[in-house]
Amino acid sequence: MNKPRGSGYVERSRDYIRKHYREKIYLEDIAEAIGISPTYLSRLFKKETGICLQDAIHEERVFRAANLLLYSELSLTEIAQYVGFPNQSYMGKVFKKLRNITPMAYRDRFKNRESEV
Image 1 (cartoon, rainbow, N blue to C red):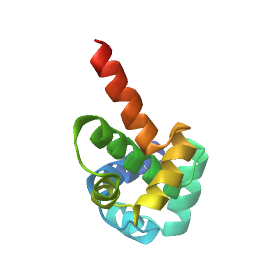
Image 2 (tube, rainbow, N blue to C red):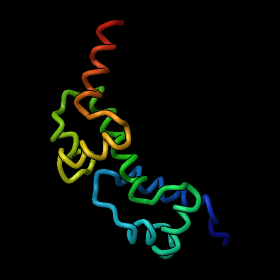
Image 3 (cartoon, one colour):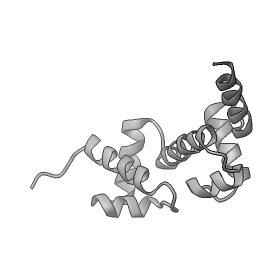
Image 4 (tube, helix red, strand yellow):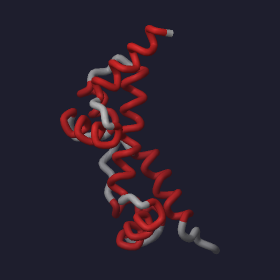
């Protein structure tokens, strides 16, 4: 039986993140799910993507949060809880780092554009 090498592990890691983004995700859980050691997964992921696994988890959560900001009326606190951030403040910090805009400003900017159409 051939095991996936390289990108196969990284893609399976990304799949795991997409399926479990609402939960606490630990490196060890992903490694166990795809059948490799946590240390190897950590190094491989960084080598192939240029980012660490935690950053990939943050990217997925911010992506999901951005969609909820645009297409729901949930509060920032509800969105943070829904997508797996420990609190609204931390979501705001990570969101701003990745999107260069605060979650509320992101929501407001979209609503302004929608009303112009």
